[in-house]
Length: 458
Ligand code: ADP
Image 1: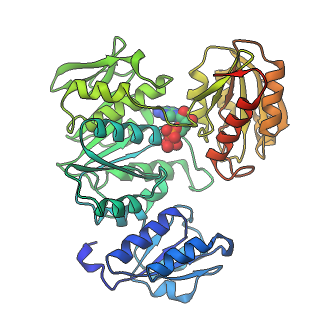
Image 2: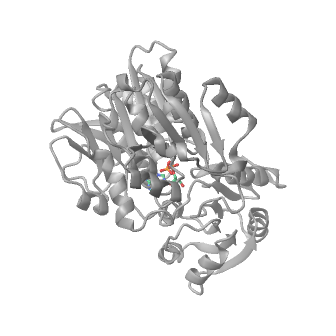
Image 3: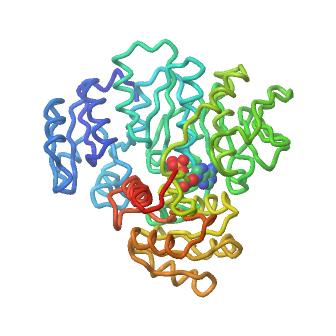
């Protein structure tokens, strides 16, 4: 939408979480009349009321009033499914529906680098952001990664950035309702099953991710994982595609060749640094780093600057985060592994005998696919949370396991039975909402418990 037309528009924002509030503030800043409509009564804190009163928004909670259907357009929060009653009514009336990323992009004048994929988004956007900062850009990081894109944009308006770039982590739910969103650089990291509780088919989920490419034109580039056959089979390759690869090097623009991470620039190999020097564990992180380098290669021509950025990057917590050892057992917090593919890469990152904590809120994945990964190295799987029975029914009798219900019991059991040199890994392959507020709370508890155990050292 043309942003000059926003003034006076009646906009309903469905939901009241972080991105909804950001969108409310942003659109109100540009003169729209906002109604926040939240179906749940208990999600409305005093802080939210104050914020909405300050921007003169109307708000309702516990129901959706008929006013919603009188809006010029709707901004829908990622948590609201397409088959919710209110969405069906909105669709029936033909009111335009946008996601917060779409709306935010109407007001961004700087280049946007947008990253999607099933796994690795947060790690990759943080790395891109860091690389750009090291190279002297005013990089603004937002999206699914702590601060909503709309908030980040609003904050940027109060500064006078000289070389602004927006780096956005974009989930499939945000992509479901884009219309003109056109990043200058669009990255798709990988496709693997996830969110099968929200999408009718796996195909629908994959297509949603691919829609990040739908508005790209000759001034934009798409950064694609050449090692991912599912992804490759779905993209229609055009002129401005760039590929990154750890394995399928033929035709790649960013790759690992003879253990050196580097770029092919117009047919000339430009080495950046030895793969071993990357301060991130696992092969999957080489892939993330290559994606990041490919995404910024037009903005950062100097190889030394890229190398400096990669070497000085600090890993993001909860992603195979080392939290210390207890009596020689090495403990890793990978609480962010909320699907099977991310747990697989965590398992592959270790050669040592493994105690693996799995479980939480199931998202419909196939746990049997973990069996071949674990046959060699597994000591025992420790099952926690609501998904214990489902996982048990899929891994029994192939893997040895114990149902222990809580994180604390799982930790204590493995520390009691483990031996020096073993690895204890929390990489649950499930969402956390059955026992925790979010994956951060789960990972923080794991870290705290480990670090409080007798014999702990870093
Ligand atoms: P996202 O934001 O997409 O969830 P994160 O960077 O937060 O991605 O990582 C989520 C989980 O996926 C972590 O457990 C991490 O170890 C794992 N992971 C990271 N990168 C990849 C990748 N390229 N492929 C598979 N799993 C990955």
